[in-house]
Image (cartoon, rainbow, N blue to C red; front, side, top):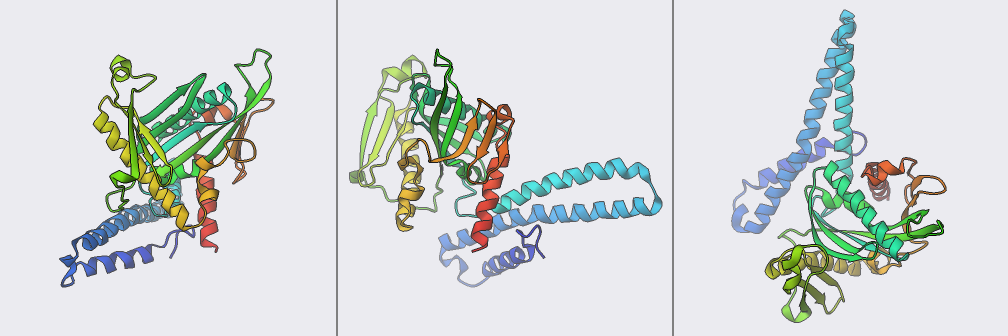
Length: 353
């Protein structure tokens, strides 16, 4: 039996039973790391299966109530049944989306970086608007986040990196990776002309301790400097900010959100591990130039989504063709339809191969 064509509880049960039966075999704990990984997988699968089982049980209970009300012509139950049906449908939709998040690292927390691109001051303001949009979305979904690095510029933000913590943060946010295009009457143009500007969004998974990325001291250059921008007087008086350059790949990360240089260094290394994991994965797949968004031009022709404020209002995703005319709601964080459509399309494309 499958639910919605994407969930097979029997397959999950078989896998859980196989993992749990292995734990009782002689010598199972001889390889402790392997054993813990298997038990961890069994726990994750149980956490995935149990909400579906609960949903199925509740659907059956509601069906029994409906049949009873129909037989007894008890119209007083109609409002209750409709309410419960809407609640069940909401639960189903949430679980359905989680089934699309089945790729490695989807369950992990994330780093989210926004860079301004072509457009100067206008683009810096656009990066600030995107930052506000994503933090509104994160608040809606109760993800915790903090600024790891912020480079302010005239009119707004040149670059900002957030550490986003919560289950499936990366799975959701990876759908936003790409170039975002803004069309509007520029508030910075005294002639009131229409401008087009661009910013890129880049999501990376926060790697857990089971994934090893070897970073030797001779492979990096570490620079310290005084943090700029907001942060109070103290943060600007000491060389607390840390920049790490990985010499082989050319990847540069930095962190300046804390007054402690040690904490900033730890955070920068954490971000570097994620960047290197993505870098080496793309190298192995021979697709680095195609998939590494930060190497693409943040300009015309490479956008994944367009946000048009004038002469009409429309947000359109170029990949899925999903649209919304309520641009204010989108800028207030109502972007689930875009994320979910992309996740569904990606899942379908993979499973139809």
